[in-house]
Amino acid sequence: VQLVESGGGSVQAGGSLRLSCAASGYTDSGYCMGWFRQAPGKEREGVATIDRDGSTRYADSVKGRFTISQDNARNTLNLQMNSLKPEDTAMYYCAARGPAWRSTWCGFASPESLFLNWAYNYWGQGTQVTVSS
Image 1 (cartoon, rainbow, N blue to C red):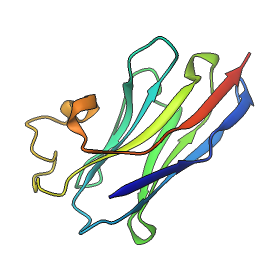
Image 2: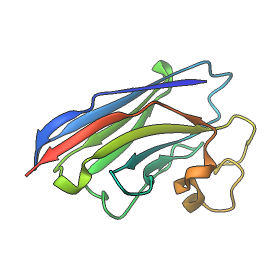
Image 3: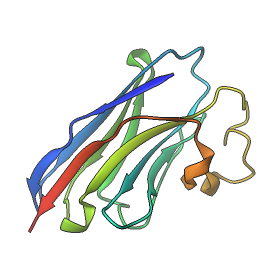
Image 4: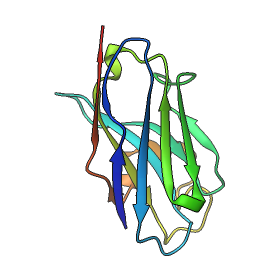
């Protein structure tokens, strides 16, 4: 499986960006997907996830501003980011967990586990988002 992110860039606070992640090499559609970000000097953190049933969840810091979506026909994962803040500045990565796990949360007992770095076995190379004040 290969994941390639695009759509990053520089915007002013309050602006919007739409990130996309093109996936290839899938054997089926049974993956859990997530967007993560890593700011300089900080650990990589989960931003938004989508499980095998299509349910979405968000970190508190982005809830109400970011929207994760999946286009299965095009094998694309998107992240619409609105009302961007300087603290959103980071490298953004998409990630996939699967296809061995057939349960809704890809083998986990709770959806919160999909926000863990080590939960994913496929990663993209990242796309930079910079928000200026």
